Picture 1: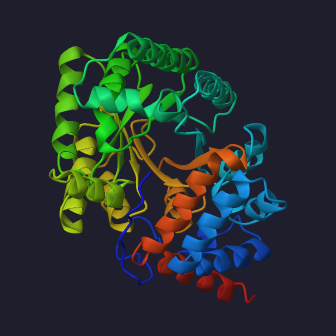
Picture 2 (picture 1 turned 180 degrees about the horizontal axis):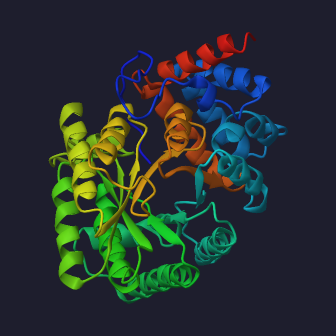
Picture 3 (picture 1 turned 90 degrees about the horizontal axis):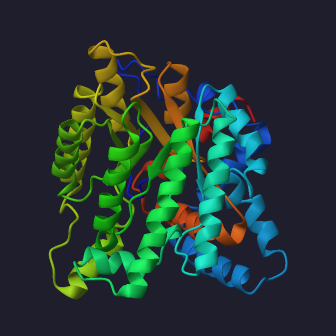
Length: 405
């Protein structure tokens, strides 16, 4: 999913849209009075960049040193807000709760950045178990995987640079290919989709290549494999269209997850330090333009593209919802999907679901020590999102007032 979600501060308005994104009764119907007030307090705290920065460093240090009560504190606050559970089985309650609200679940095992072979194999086995869990739940059509959880980053970076792997490295890459194929083969057997997450630009090329190879093999009859396109990169709209044309030429169904992007500061900093042009758009308007163009392109070609509009950007969700209605498309077509992160932008997710669109929550799970990097990103991005946290708080407070709490 994306991290730079820049919005205006005002409350969303219906303004003729088929979805009333300002309906807080629907948006927060699953929260008890206590949960509603706890969520509002958490978002108020995340409005302070200094507090989030200090807390993030303390959390990493406390977990690493196994500080007493650290896990308990994290699990009762930010973990509860953004994570489905510490195991697949413990996530079932979250999955069921979402399904009751006509919202699907995309399962994501939170491990990333692994290097030991036994750890990489363990991530693969966890993803295989997630596929079995998904197949047993009508409410879990897709799982999400990270290639950085299946191979050392150094292998991807070397391939991305066009350097030749030595014999040892080639063996490690072959193991990655084997792990990925096992996951996609199992997904195809069970009829479950696989989102392949995007990473930093300096390791992304081999991931793109692997994703296209898996699509070509497994997307013959339905979409099993999806690649992720970070539209804040100025090359991604063109790549999306090119990859779709390759899929048409090779006669397989193209799968795409659209996000704005998650590594803007890191990408710009590295480009500046190493003296190359940043792959990131220079302006927000350029990113927004490419993102919405990507959404429209996928809608225009929905019969040959299975895609997910995975954004928290209110305007981009409105654009897609409006276009689906205006074009007379089937809101429940399997190729046309929305998604937001669990714990964020509930006013988008549940109002879309209430209006009858295909929408899912991206639900990470795993032990605190595995998901702590993910949790820190969620907290930090909320402090850097212009207006989004304020909008969420505004709507939470509106619902608190409506309930007279």
